[in-house]
Length: 354
Image (cartoon, rainbow, N blue to C red; front, side, top):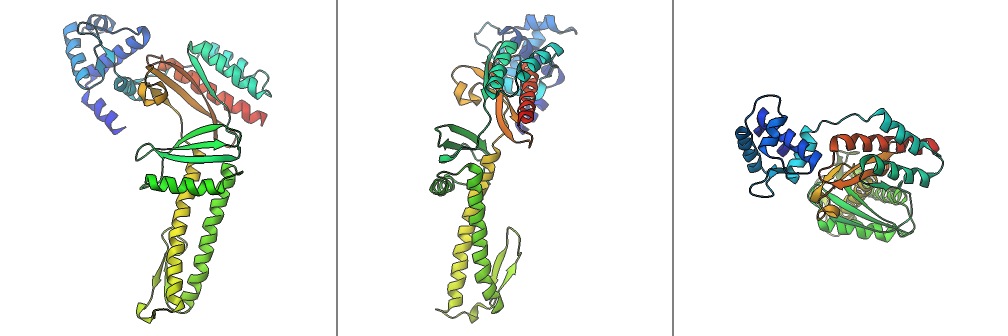
C-alpha cells in the first residue's frame, strides 16, 4: 500500500487524468490507446504531444506498456493494480440487476445446490464472464494438514478431509515463524487430527496448553513455597519464574531437577501455543479480493483476472465465496459491485435457511 501511495504522489493531476482515461478506454475496447484518441476524450484542450510525454513518464514508472513500437499504450499488470486499488470509481448496481439477482438467488431458498447453481448462472449472465462459486465450508474430519510459507507475511494451510476434499486457506502467520516451525506444527496436528474436525482439533490444542500450565503451576508452587523462586508477570503471556538465591541450590537436589522440568515444560508450552495460533489463523482464513494476472498463479499464463467476494453466515464467519473470472480488462467498476451484492445476498439467504 505504501508503494501505491508513493506512485500516486509521483503523478501530478494531469498524469492521473491521462492514466485514468487511458485505462478506462483500454478496459472498454481492449485495444492499445494512442495520444490522438486520448486527446479527443478530454474536455480541456491538451495536445497529443503533451499526452505522449505524460504517457512516456507513466511507462517509465512501469504503469504502461507499448505492445508495438508505433502503437498506443496499454496498462501493465502493475498499472491495473494501481488503478483498481487507488483510482477506480465503482458504479452502482442497477435496480434491474438487483431484481435479476434477487429472483435467482431467493428462488427455492431451501435448496442449497439450487442456490449455488443459480448464483453461478446469474453472475455469468450479467458479467458475460465465467463464474466461480465456492460452496459453504463444512466441518468434515481432517485426514491431513500441511503448512507452506508463501512469504514473510503469508502462509498457506492445505487441508485434506476424510471425504477427499482439499481446501487451501491463506493466513498471516505469527511473526518469526520458520519453515521448520510449519513442519513441526503440521506433524503434531497430523498425529492428533485423525477423525477430528478443525474446531475439535483446536479444542485438543487448548487442552494441551492448559495441561502444561497446570504442570508448571504445580511444580512452581512448591518452589515458591520453599522460597526458591517467585513469579514475574504471573497470568500474562510473558510470565517468568525467577530463581531466588541460586547459591541455595545444591547439585543433585530435587529443586534443581524441578527447575529443569519447568524449563522443559515452558518450551513445550510455547510450541503448543504456536500450534494453537496456527489453528486459530487457519480457521479464520483470509478475505478475498481482486486478483490480476499473475497475482493468482492459477491464471498467470492466461492473462485472466479474478474478482471474488466472500459470503458469511449469521455469525459473520466466512463460509464460501462467489466470483467472476475474465480477461484482465474486465469492467471492474461494474463487476465488483455485482459480485459484492451477490455475495451478501447469498450469505443472507443461507443464514435465513439455517
